Image: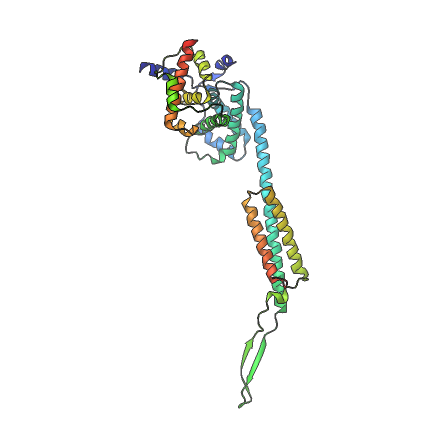
Length: 164
Length: 191
């Protein structure tokens, strides 16, 4: 037991701080600079992707707005049907109805420059995102962006008369 | 070479910082490398000392691992929650860096515990002679046995902590310590 005490006492005396023989700070500082620069590059890259995301949202929004505008223009004016009572010869009531709602096949024509341009933008963005995903398959936010882009593209496709 | 390591730059274990560390940590997290340099200056001795003992007084390797430890500390600093002293956090990170290096080498084939008991001879420790002799003998131990001995007998860790860090059972940690002490006793008796 005495041996144990002496042993532990002697071993604990070795637990001293030992400075390195040379100053390690310059090498550490150089590595920190590299780390910081790499972190900044990564942050810039994320900002770049956010910019692409913002562009996609704007492009998609513009496409949808264009589609809605076109839809609004092409919706037929309300048709008023006047019912005339045979006995009075006076119109007593009128009902207003609109033409049956236009389907996408009616107004999303493929040669529409606004829709075609939006679709092209979305396709380009989708291709870029797929390239980026090949480089960074672990980037979850890219998957989200790609899904969103494809969803917008699908919505445009559904508005297209060629949709099957 | 090891003899030179034994007599170099040994200093008191206590770190003259403490309360100021928190402010320096906050500045470092904000990207202030000058603040981090102050932390380095204040704590490098303790971190390097522990790493040096764990790598068997290999000065060059210890310096590399000390650099790695401070770079990792810089990268992980934002995760430091101020729940423990910064010196403790940094020291554990330094030890962990050395142990990761040890785990990555796979130099040593793990032996069954009963074989370790046999190799150790089952005797209680002893009072060694010169400090230099003891350090040299420790440095020649197999890496895992040395790590357990240094962490338990020198750094004062519990077997549970050692087992957790080295990914082994508590019984294996005890057996490795027993083995290391036996090998040391033999080395010091034969000198």
